[in-house]
Image (cartoon, rainbow, N blue to C red; front, side, top):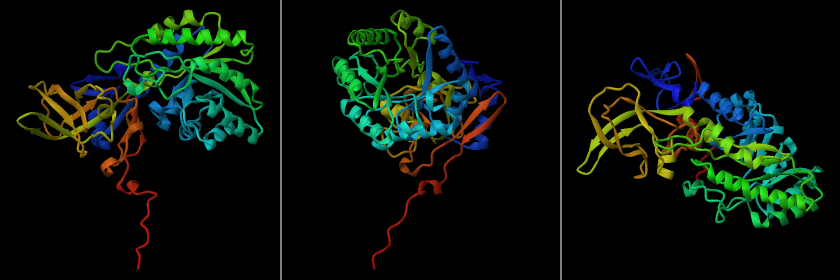
Length: 423
């Protein structure tokens, strides 16, 4: 079962695998995140199989979805993990990840995070600046270890995606400019407590064309030749090409894992390195939905609104990126269709899940499924407007398990205290 078939209508009801979404909503309330175990595993195995014959490690990008249950599922399937914070590293380890299959990316690693990663003996730190490289040296020296690192190079490739998720252009905060990379590797080799074991590159997210990936690989391949010619390649064992393969939200036609692998294979020919891949959205995006209930309808001289109980604090992508998510009725009425904004209760005009969307006219109490919500959904959720975060369930065939309890109002003040009154 893939992500497309995991959510389908059965006897007039939208189901996740064999479980009706309405049943889940009735038992566990809304808003509610629902994930398909079969779709999650199918996504990972498809990506892994596409690179069969090429030494590789698929490291799931934890930032896309960090539910312990999903991390555990991928760890059991043989995945490694790409983390971008000490908290993500802790969660991956808590979920059963092998630290020797974890890479740590990100531009602002703190001294505590670097030390924690080295103490856990992760596969490598993806170093993103000259100052970070010096910090890793100092911390590794204090711990009496040699730090395995890859330098993340910025190849200045336009990924042709939303500017907020483009990471490989010259103006991006990420990585070391590729023109400076040779000098950075010389410095890394001179440091007594650093071992440069890889080269890292990540150009962006939600890419729907293989050309930017191929372009970036060509530029990194040229850097590898320079490193070899300078005598700096002897310890290199990994080439980390990051993630970024997109999914279908609307009319996009992203490459299938097989097409992505086929596009990269010529540029990888002859490299004696293990390929590291960091897919996130591609594995989980279409394996999850957000179920929400219609609260009110409202018509003004300028607009129709469908007001639901999910909001921007539950699913931020539409407000943050203007992102499109398909919205499907859980129990279709086959009635009249309207054009409306689907909005939430948060007190912001930017609180919307869809704008000017044609959809079947819903009644108050009806359930809607916001599709393709498995990536950057719950993981971006907040308590804005003092709203408890949703529950989440993982469906497995005809059964399911609650993998995240709904927060309570008491959770909203956990850790808070009131200062003593002044006399």
